[in-house]
Length: 126
Image (tube, rainbow, N blue to C red):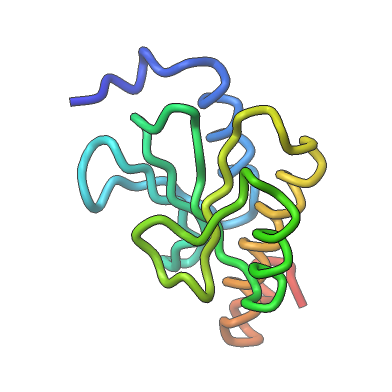
């Protein structure tokens, strides 16, 4: 079993970033080593706590997913996910922090924009 208190500061910072989005939450529905980040009960990120280096599965527009994979070695088809809609982003230091933040935000927004207008308004996204 993974002891979350022993996780590196790097993961703690990353977790805080994922939870900074309005309505986001963290759960462990599969096991205690797979962190799932959701907004309104829909997943927008998944992190394997034992992955080394740290990596995150993020939802992505299918056209953008292919482009990103062709441009960055650290971005691959989503591990154990729908390969059309998810990318695995390896946080090995090769990607600019701004790009990683944009990919996280894009994932969150893709999920929120698939929700009802009422839910989008509640979350402050339109």
